[in-house]
Length: 300
Image 1: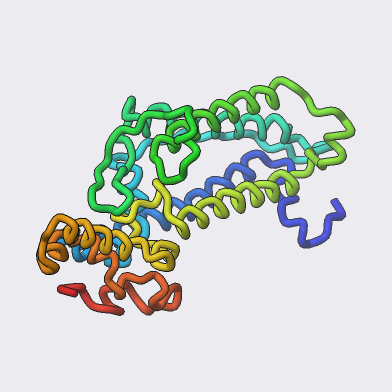
Image 2 (image 1 turned 180 degrees about the horizontal axis):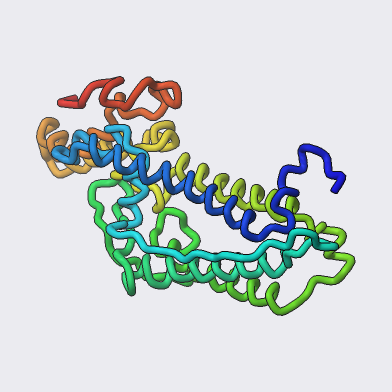
């Protein structure tokens, strides 16, 4: 066809079966890693001391995400097979319609997560805890359509955002399925080029990763402290230290002795403020889990 060597996606240009095989293999690699990592973490995870030796301190990575979603079972999918057009005169894949199908199905999944999984209508709910990580359990979260839904530290926004985004995705998918793009737009955006379609997904993944990085760095309702541990931002702002001083000040104002006031500090708050749990202590270059690097916390 005269394409240069770096146009690697041309090998699946008019071969629906191979295109789906590439997608399935990519999904298999991602899901296979997640599954094998989860099995390994389950094998080494010690749940005996959730206060002083929580999952995040044991170097767990996949289990906190699974626990946040309240995952107990998996669900199956389906298989799609298509024929191969060996010598077409032009690209045989209707990429705008395929995009519409993907967008519609993604919208349905997004809406379902928010309307059923998160709200416990048909699912376990999600992990919810207080701002200082003292409590936490998997429970139902009802959507909120007020201003509080835009607060990243309020869990109700998780349900409402997914319902809204899913609805928008469903409507946009139906539009792409029923309306054909104008010829100029088709050519200008190169909608018939499979490399354009596949590379555009990188932008979507980058946007999602950018949001996740921000919420994990600054903390949010999607990254509870009890599952993921303290954030660097909380340490920089003295988040737990301020709560400790506030608790002691309240105790002293109530005519308690200094030792009595300090004894009122919750053990988890003191544990989160422990310097060994500082995310900046070693950071990405820490060798091994925090257990191996710093030892198990036994006192202050």
